[in-house]
Image 1 (cartoon, rainbow, N blue to C red):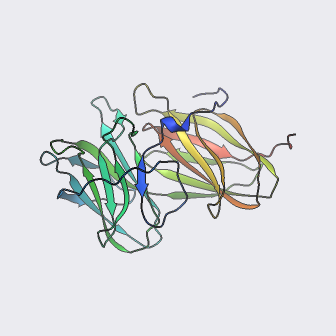
Image 2: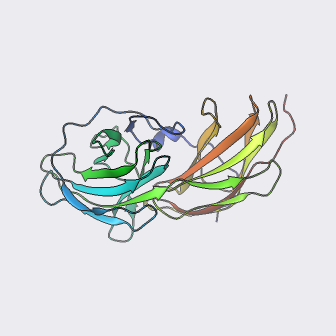
Image 3: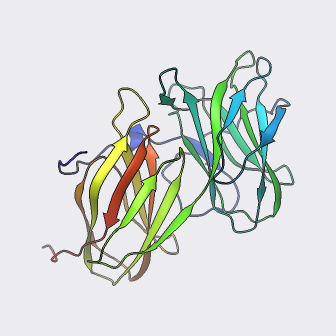
Length: 273
């Protein structure tokens, strides 16, 4: 377990390149990329259950992907977790093609890898579902002659409830790849606050990469970003004065296939000149 003070991490090093289409939830740090080419027919490969088991991805033929289904309800907030399993238990970032389609066949979320400037991902956020029915997740090689072996899973976005400023924190326990958890707190305009992490205990899934958690803090209506960074240890980070009052939402998900837990709270601090 780390005990050092937090240092600012370069978020660009872990940003995934994603295209999110349609109505969405809170904005994320990923950068859009161009749409992938027309999809090759993929092999039906089973049903994903929300917060259920990981399923295997194995290309049935060069350039051909696997298609999975899941049942979605209006208002569901979900993420797709994805990684390449290593021989010694590593969780290696996904760098191929991942597409989510709604019951009408429209693409609602997608990732296109295969380029050195596009970072691999472990997580694809799906915009809040606006249609009930059967959705499709396609996982496929980028190259026409490529083969792919991966693991895919479907996560609900978990609301852990509220914390009070200067009150006890809540445990963020990210044990599934691609999992996201959220905490809400209320503040007043010009109130000075900090983000406190205690008992940071995460294990990286990628050799040579330090375990970490991506944090974003938005106001409730998603118009103001208060904070965004990758944090890798226990400690406090000054957030400064809140520019508006009301509810704020802390979003957290791991980077580099990390799994573990940390207790998150929001202490106040004296105004700074």
